[in-house]
Image 1 (cartoon, rainbow, N blue to C red):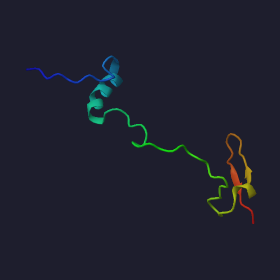
Image 2 (image 1 turned 180 degrees about the horizontal axis):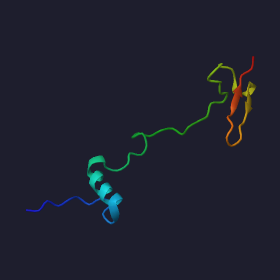
Image 3 (image 1 turned 60 degrees about the horizontal axis):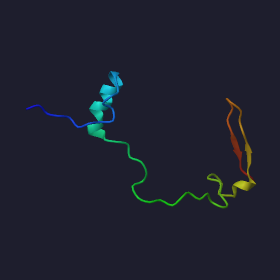
Image 4 (image 1 turned 45 degrees about the vertical axis):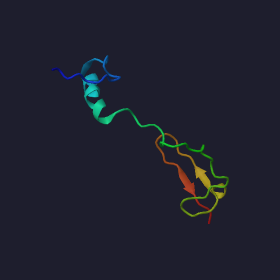
Length: 77
């Protein structure tokens, strides 16, 4: 008797990548999306604090870098 493989979403995909996905799909399964339970929408904090000095971020100066230069966060004294 011949063993019949279960259908995968990659059955019609040609080439090496298709063959690899057809092989791995029964092992890994589909992508896991979400946390698996209902989540509340994200609410940004009203008054965020600096992770370095714990003062409000509104009191900081942020120097944005361009292309290849870095961005600096200047904490108040």
